Length: 194
Image (cartoon, rainbow, N blue to C red; front, top):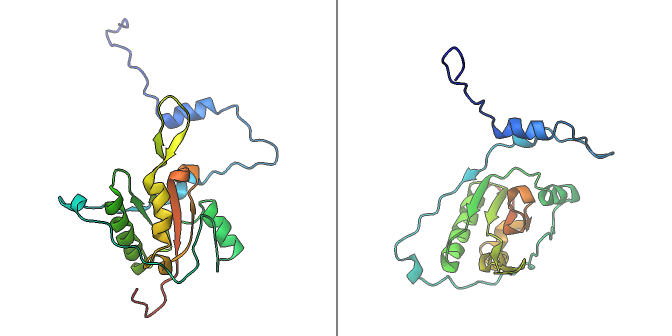
């Protein structure tokens, strides 16, 4: 207790102040610039997925092959070099997000199909699909590749999704790394219904 009878209050330190204090003497490497506008991106729209009580009883919809060439991570047919780089670097604004963590494979498949259709119909261009990275194996640093992480790229290449997609790529670490995908949708043309 202080002589005036008042207890001394501890100063509350928030994370931003603590980080600023820790980084005060840090200088960027030569030839590197400091990006100051990283927090200026508006937060992406979140899409909620409602699960029905009997969702686990339904089978996944049958896969429909696409007539279009198969896309792999980073393939950018019909996309200019600058846009392809912006997608890869996570510099395109994410307009919607789908988190598939904790979903069964059939639920995730249906959710992805509905999400891509809804985003395309709404005229959105860049969306984020979060699959998760998979399970870490006990007593090792190895990871077992997650089922959804493996399946989502296949589902993106099935119809009707493939006809709506221009490209997809792994997200940057800030958006989920290899456990998430940026999906670039084709522009909606006037008069299109799909």
